[in-house]
Length: 366
Image 1 (cartoon, rainbow, N blue to C red):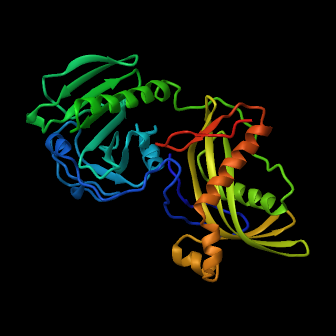
Image 2 (image 1 turned 90 degrees about the horizontal axis):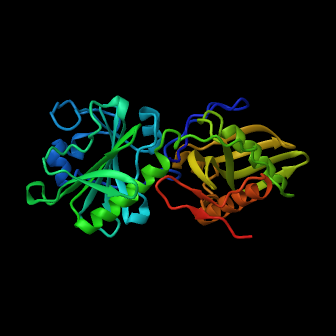
Image 3 (image 1 turned 120 degrees about the vertical axis):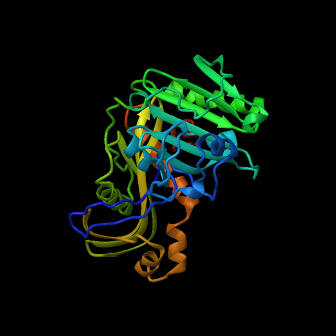
């Protein structure tokens, strides 16, 4: 699921607002139009859809309009009630646009990382919200049954009549899925196998829930600034959907201490995880460039920048400081080391963490 700054109430400060950012569970958006196969089957192009606004044109295709475009997967999850099926970036494709059709059907489009023109369409829905378990939008009569991994799949298309586009559809007791793409038969088979394996592992009756009872994250170390940042992160995380554990990754640019008073200039990243097997899977979170004021370990005020202009003003346009708090390599290093710190002290086996649509990141071997 995706990362974003969201509106959060802080008792000791004003209401904090936030803007969407790329990160945990989301893909950076790039300009895209619907592929020829989607245009042929759905008669809709991405130019006909605006973010958060449905189209007015009614067309009779696999699923009725409206199509609403979304920026992040967490926004889609709130509407759908589940995480939409997502093609991992290890496939060589990256998500270019995300729709929900008629409030029920997730329709994600993926384009090749190498600049190719091929587009992959991935759909998913809860069966009890649909009229049929066929969400492919393809109405040819050439479906053929096949077994992929342990799942029965139907595959169709591939002819010039549909621009050499292949389609596949499958379902389980709870979800319906489909994938389409104008690619070679071998490449389509590889993509299909990846998606089917994801649905076998993650889209069972309880595959998207977690029964883990994990302790709260606690900083283990002697850095008092880090301890204050953890307390600030707890407040910034208020208002997010509940997860098994929140583990922050604060990037501190500078701080000032006067007696028991401390002022910290930082970018506080918060990540909410559910434990799935031995992997912490990121479900939500956000980044908060902020100035924190504290008495001892008690937070007295948090000022958060919600835009680039606000960030520059909050940090007095100090370019060196801004560069330091927005150092992505430093943030990744802190994130991994703090997850490792948590694993070392929580009496729970954790060997990796994973952002939505990304490959797991392995923790250091002991």
